[in-house]
Length: 484
Image (cartoon, rainbow, N blue to C red; front, side, top):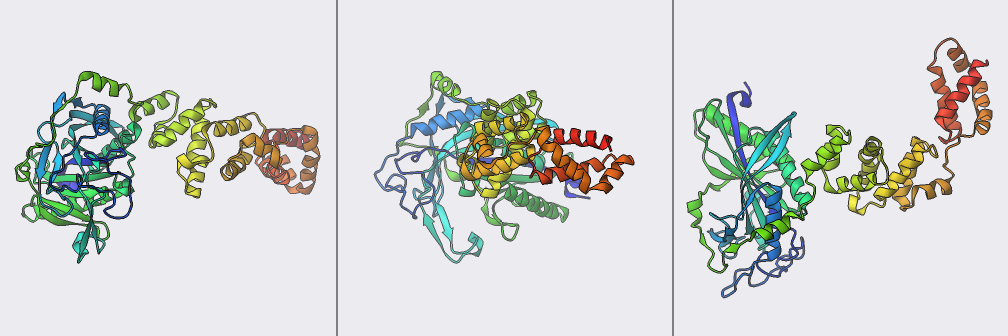
């Protein structure tokens, strides 16, 4: 029997989202990614004696905005706490976080898996400062003989989003994380660059025999920064825990690190409970009082969220698949919406957006924001095809030139002489030449093999370098062949 036949997985996720402020949560140091080690620091974020933190108001704005997008209750009264632990990347020897009175609580995110919708509870979302970064001499901490510390990231504002243990499969976990990241991206509270660590996942996982109500002993895999790593880590950890349970052994509650290269989890330390951190209220920061007018002001800035945008596109007769692909990226979705203002065939626009346009973005290695082809230009290109000015095949040539030059499609068509040939008089001479050169295809057509005309159409398109109007060509060929 498979693992899922013997055991039910129970999973809750902690997601650390780096907020897109220009400065850190308690000081004016830059949050810009990169830079020489330990250059984006000051006495406040380094925790030197005698300094006092000052809360960045924009961090609170982003936290409220994210909480509203996650259907959370926004607390009128919250406070910061010191989470005490000793680790080289924490220069203060504590993290300024929120414990019993977080800014956001009791929300939910709806996911859809195999056609079934399910709400995943959000226990809380709270503000905190990030730790520094250990730079290891080896690929992982477990294979390194020395480590240095870069404190540039220390004090970067985070929103930690904690889910309920409502997830019951890897598929559900990935659907939840992908939707959560999309929501953060749409609200623009984070740049969501997983490769830069802007979003990191902690996976709390346990197994229990089917029918058992009590949760099993959980482990926590820390700091996963890609969906593929989450999937591989969970697959390994489920197999590891299942083997222990099958052998009658106990699963140890511990914190794990994921070794991407070896594809295994490794123990970091025993898993702490809240009392191990000796939380106490942060004495250097006053409680945070948030009036309802503040919350409502932020609510007015909420954009159309991914789920609502998917539903809108479905209402325009796009398939679930098309709506899902287009809304998977806010940038692509915004591009599509803007193009829709100048071109009304939703399905055709979706096909070109997901097809040729995306293919060329990937082929040239440019982001959508850097694309030389603007939404209105794509709409103009599709209008030229619909009007018969150019064929769909020539359209693919034109959009490639648009990517190369940034020129409007009608300009390219004129400069390159790509306009479709629809004049029957100009085409008729070529039709006669093609018929004369291909007597066997003519005989096949007259013998009832109607598909033979397809070969002749192809020869026409080749002779005219794709510029002949296929519809006109088809009609002319049929008329001429009927006279043979």
